[in-house]
Length: 321
Image 1 (cartoon, helix red, strand yellow):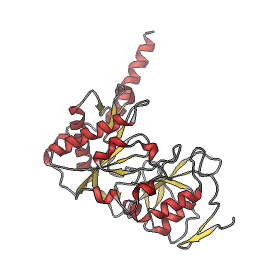
Image 2 (image 1 turned 90 degrees about the horizontal axis):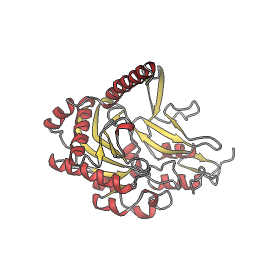
Image 3 (image 1 turned 120 degrees about the horizontal axis):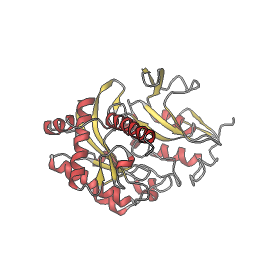
Image 4 (image 1 turned 60 degrees about the vertical axis):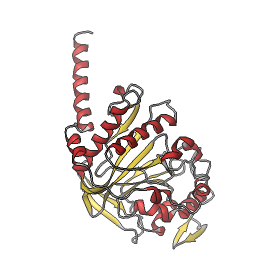
């Protein structure tokens, strides 16, 4: 395979190939974009186990957690036993420009770091709500729900930063003092519940899609080892949109398709809004944690409810209903 050019010791190949169907961008544009924003995206990746979404020519996009065998020896990594998949998983730690360029050359389009750091698996430093509008709903619905979260934070004397997800939703990040995973998870559930109560006609915390009733979903499950797409990361979507940080006042004036691999750099200029708009780390209020401990864990509750409904359906079928 011929090398088109080299940067920071990384051989870059096939740069003029289309990135993926509908990307409206080439691999070169992906490499150039990530290189241009490397000082801004790396703080969100550094020291955090990384999963990426790659798009190889002629294949469907896929999430890569485990580093391939051909990964260069200089790439920092972390291996651990994953009980869920019963295997040893070796995650990358994307620490520097060279590592980011290597991933870009591997056609890694999306960058999903964990909320925990490699040396502190038991603690997190942010509460995150993933705000997901229902199918067919316009972006302004997600914006309105994000402002419910902001209002709930205001009521607690707290603050957060917001970014587009790069898909159709919004992510609200609330930096906190390092906190045990279970404590942060409880606070996340309580924050979502408080936002839901502000306008239950707009937003819901219902985990099962069939229970959401066409409302915006306030996903409070991003805690612990969960991943969230990094600020400034491109997404595998038509036009290659970017997860883009915005001031709260800007949210209503943009749409995700405007913020793409081709337009984001010009909009950013020399600024780093994710760093500039991020509040300082805050302690979690005890009242929020206690409220959250009384709220069932969504996935567990959904699993039990799913089993209950399945039993009810089988019983109805046996009765001939």
